Length: 240
Image (cartoon, rainbow, N blue to C red):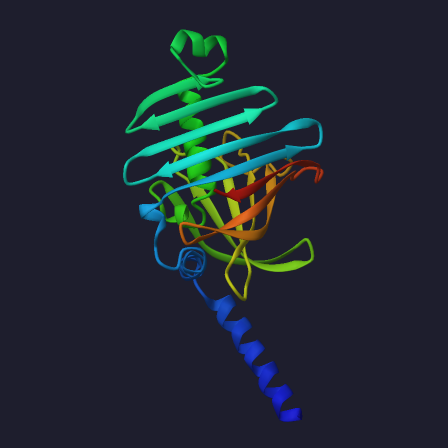
């Protein structure tokens, strides 16, 4: 019995040492392998639904379609009695309001635009493409691997910055040290010198999983302010 306990303890120690000595790139590769074992993100072509809930606003249901090989993106969002649709097909933008296609003048009256369509495309493609998107162009992965305790759980943390053309926020990605599943991410705004502003930004707690196109995606994303832990809202992924 004592021998078994010693062997188990030794394995845990060796595992901890190996995890701590791994490079940032190696940890990212393991995380990508966990979420996208068959490397399907590059060929992603599927649909899913995201339901956003907040404490003081009606829920919003967004039906999303992404076909990366065909450069196609569409999101149809319904909140109360209003439904908006944004579609980008090989860069060509189309919008609809309550099921009726509208032109740019009508879209402006509805506070809709092709810039917003691009924003939604980038938003959903980025968040639901993580951690695979961390290997994308303009993404700068720090060599340093941090070991942090966040919300009473231990994580391996990778820091990411972006080229100026991509974004100025500093992001941190928290991975389970045993499975390498992505369980938290966090971002901070920066000042004119590129220094992090600690009272800015948000952190997002990820829980449960949904299998979309054979990719393990976080099912529930709960958003909070870094400054005071104030709850902002939750996105729940629903498989179509």
